[in-house]
Length: 100
Image: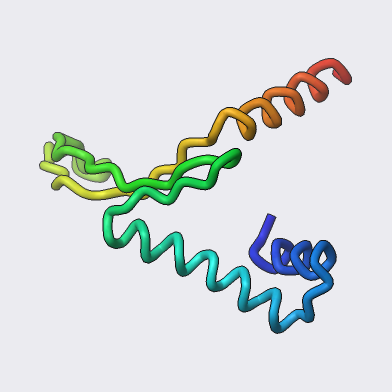
């Protein structure tokens, strides 16, 4: 699903004009970005939590030369789905498996 499809769904479900739906989605996304940038957890009850995780430095290998390299530590954005979302995904997977 793309951002444009999300905007279209917001328009259909809320009756908002396209301009307002775009602004609503942009404000939501910017809020999540701002929270993560300040190292806050962004928790959406019933959906999940976005948070920043620090990855340690590690050894790697240059695929072209095979040379050992040191990969520096970095921060990454992580999403952990909440229980209701996990159950929705699990039930949709089970339905797809039963159709096969």
